[in-house]
Length: 407
View 1 (cartoon, helix red, strand yellow):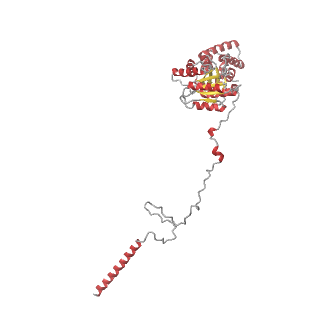
View 2 (spheres, rainbow, N blue to C red):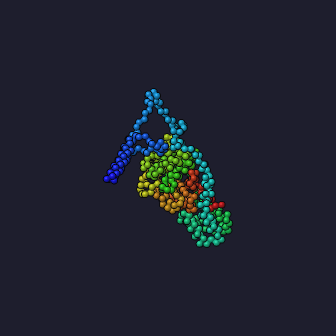
View 3 (spheres, rainbow, N blue to C red):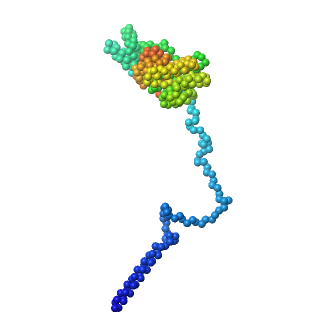
């Protein structure tokens, strides 16, 4: 019996202890969230608030009157000097005017450059003519050399016949005699009776008007810009007409050339009427009292009819102001006989008065000068000998032949 009573007492004590632990645990879980922190040494920053978290209890701060609150100071401009704020944009600054070099003797000064690419023709002919026995095979080689240089069939046959006759009469042939002989015959072939002056004077009160024609890609617009430099170098005032409205950036390119030498460029919208722009260019030239108006035209060769209509209209409209003094055809010397096909088309459309041969320094086919003059019956007046702005030179047959055959 005592054992039973002892067991009951122990059971009641155990139940009481367990109940105390449960009540104590519940009290700890019910502590309010605003209880002070028990670890004052905590250094980690509090976690970022999340959606649904309660806002922090506002802190008590002393209130200030409106007189005590200072207004924020205006911020100074961001590190920009006062003069920089009013400085014009770089695009607004006028380009520096260049002074082109004089045109007198340009071809002679560029002779070395021309000789480097053309000497194969002259040296080849001199080597063949210096052979001890000039048999038929040698003369055929001479003829082939001339044809390869794009001299043309008829001019080549004429030159070979004259050389054969003079060599036969001359007999003994020293190197100096052969060179003098070849030089004389080549100059005769190029023609010394042509008037190679670019006509830039109208003879009336209006400016001289020069129209530049040619296929796109031959350097037509660049040649127009370089011709402006030639005229400015000779003391002439120039107005440029950007009538090539069908090629992207043609007007921009021409205007850049004009700005370099202080020449004004008259232009219109892309795809506009070329005749209208040409008309306005001559009108501006008259108003400004310019000496020369240069008109750059489109060079499309899709159909001869379209080209004829377009260039014919430009010519008729320009002539309402006065005579058209010069029509220059720009040809790429590297195209050889293909250039002659282009020349024929343009000659049928407008009355070509002179030829400009570009890229003459990049080919050993200098004979194209002879061929194109024979084909059109008009002289080569200007030649382009490089990419430089002043590499356009008046054509001089003697200087050209000297560069062709070397010293």
